[in-house]
Structure formats: C-alpha cells, structure tokens
Image (cartoon, rainbow, N blue to C red; front, side):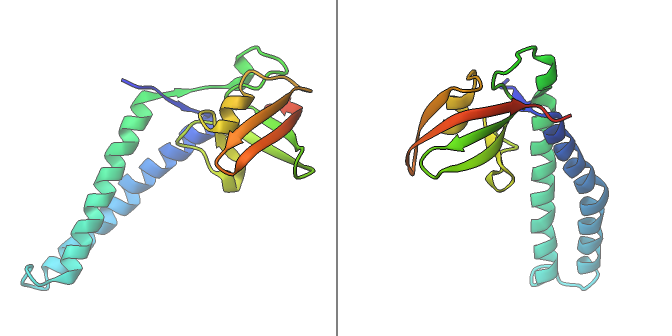
Length: 159
C-alpha cells in the first residue's frame, strides 16, 4: 500500500472535510432524496436524479478520504533534526533570479499542493530540486514554462 505524506495541517484539513461530509453533506443529500421521492414517479424526477448523483459523489469522496487517511504518514519537519536543510513540510524563501523577486513556498504532499497558497508538492519539479538543499545554494529547475533559477535565502518551520 502506497503511503500518503501529509503535513499536520494537511491531515487536519482532510479530517475536517471527512467530518463535514459525514455529518453535514451526507444527511443533507439523504433528506433531499427522501423529499424527491415524495414527489412521485422517480423515472422522470430530475430532483431525485440530481440528489442521487450528489450522493454518489459524496460517498465516493468519503471513501477516497478514508483511504488517504488510513495510508497517511504525518510528517513534522521540526522532528526531522535536519537544521538548515529543505525537507518535507518546511517553508523555503527563494530569490527568483530571472524575475528578480522573492517567493516563499512550503514543501507539502501531493494531496496538499496548492500553488495559490504557495504550497508545492515535494514531487513537483521545484519541490524535487529543493529537497536536501541548504541556505545559499542555487537550484536550476526545468519546468513546463522553461528553466528557472532560484537561490535559497531561508529555510524555516512554522509551528
């Protein structure tokens, strides 16, 4: 069974989603199905069909989340004992040499990756290039948009 790497915040987010699906969304859609059934003929009942489709989605997502959480390995970078090295869960301040700007990314698991929130997967091109590097090192990354060069300015963990 393949393990799923998560930060503590990522595991909490998945747990919260699972709890919401089970305690809020599932009962809501069950009620919608019951209400649609009360309208009579199910063969031409669009409300019933929509509610059943929603139920299928919710049940599928619940099953998916349960598998992810069962396989989860939550990693706390503060316990890894690797000072000043980019590891899973750390935040990395970079200087983007081509764009002359400073960017910060957190290295996270595939399920948590969210570029809009500056969270990049450890398995992404940038994530793979950064893992194991230290402050002051420069990394060259081949991305779909071309080669990018970064200098590592700072590595830190947020509690």
